[in-house]
Image (cartoon, rainbow, N blue to C red; front, top):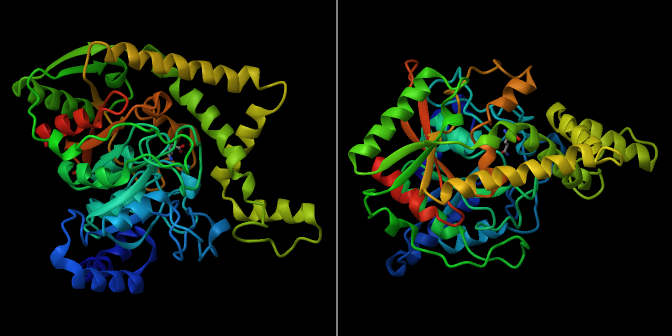
Length: 448
Ligand code: GLN
């Protein structure tokens, strides 16, 4: 724990991953753990961990990267995943920067500051869990927790050269995760190695009656899966994942990875996910619609900051929201409110839901004949700070390869698979069947 804080002191001025540190309580916990060390067998014992700032931590400030919650110093309860981590005896080092309410792909939508890519601080770390990926890549913490609605664990993991998993929808409890788009959000682990990732996921999964979408399924031993080789593994490579828009260097690294799999006895074939070209459009309608409903709770009364300029109640709602939310959040609330409004519901929201079903069926069809789907995590490596921030549509397009996975509810993982000529990490995405994280770990570990 002390090495972790020392490292933060050394590098966080440049990386800017942390929004809030938990120093006092972390040392207290570490001391407690030191005293009970001898009879504790748990594998995560004493591991310093960082938490994305949209996950509720009792008594530890939780801002979601938003000015709206800058004074939310004292959340009253822990998210289920925090309770579980506590039981596993990890030590929470602090809260990690993110795009405001998890909306963004570069961390530049944080209302505090932008986290930088530890490999080169002129570049973004990705988003929205950019703080979580950067902190692990920079060695500030061993493990971190992120959330992924449309790619927010996998894309920053790819940009920062670490291992990130978005679990199957329903595998990890969302209780205490500040909701962005409830039908897509999942919490997941970010680590340096695949094996670490398997151990951390093990601590996070499990049925939770506090989350009505939490699945009650058997839980395998994920680390065991890494012991099996990939002989006979059937890999599908969607042609849509290697088309224009994907940079030549990324494509080359992915093809090289596929060659490695071949050499290890796996086979791969090209397949099609024909509806994935509609995924970005469907996602931004659905996610924004859900966000417009979820973010209605920020009204200046129940949580966070209240405008001081208001003279009556209606103004208080309006001004608190106008002052508290940043531009991207407002853009999504407006888009979502429009898409759900009467007269437009059928044309936009309902149509997007139908597209979502088609995308899900694309995956089901491929998984009839293959064990995993492999492709790039993102079309490019990390881009420069400031390069895309004025053009939301280009920013949205960066999520094209991660979003279909959330729409289908299946698990997806990003592992490092090389570097660009600029020295920036490239991510390989491995996608699996519902609740088949074991096969993802098996495939990822063999490659690593
Ligand atoms: N970048 C995507 C968005 O802005 C995904 C975000 C996420 O997964 N939380 O919505």
